Image 1 (cartoon, rainbow, N blue to C red):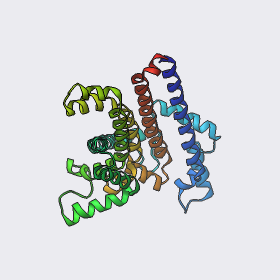
Image 2 (tube, rainbow, N blue to C red; image 1 turned 30 degrees about the vertical axis):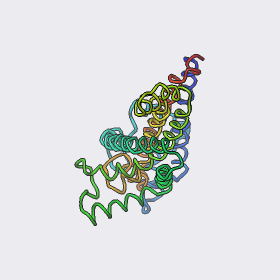
Image 3 (cartoon, helix red, strand yellow; image 1 turned 180 degrees about the vertical axis):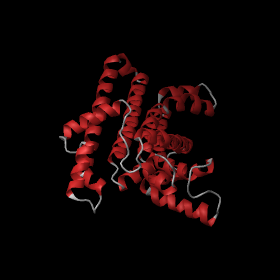
Image 4 (spheres, helix red, strand yellow; image 1 turned 90 degrees about the vertical axis):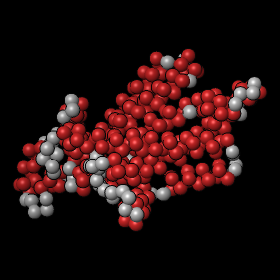
Length: 305
């Protein structure tokens, strides 16, 4: 178990470093940041002055090393557009994104788990096929389109919810549904597959032969074992939600890291974009590591090894 944990930890560190190098290189390859900062009316001397001021004329490995060392200390530099420390901006915006991700994950679990259980109890029935339709629709439907449909329905046709902002809990209802619905199919399918496998096992047949109540067999014996992979999947899905909140936050004008990322990309604010990519990818890597270690702890074959 210790060797497996160390191996997964080393792999997580390598992934995080690779993501940081890739994001740094891609942003630099997208164009000269000095030209983007100077604007179209700038002269060659103005552009050269910006390169020297911000160190863009140094070799890329030196720029990356300097940025990474400061980033590990919590210093992501200053925003080129907003003219304020990037770390302060992230501290202001990240709680909104974390709140949205947590609510969306709770919504996905509350919808996906019951659908998966019901579909496994009645396989190949109309209930199972309806759950499959929900699953296919959730993955095939673009999030921005679903968000706009909800805005038209519940903010214009039936003015029940505010279309944008983040002032009250009502502002999070539609973004939670949009972001959570995208993760629901994976949770539903995994729950269904796990329940089908567990319900066909010998100890479930033994529990039924002893005359236990069907609800006890289902919830106490079957679900407890079938839900184990769902727990690890939920950690990974939460990381996906944090990274995938860019579109949702932009549509609903939530003041989180997603909207900040969109504004920074459109304005060529490289320090802010790099910081957001590094922070969100680090969340995903850490959550994936937790999911792997949780599976290893629950799996006796890996635990013994």
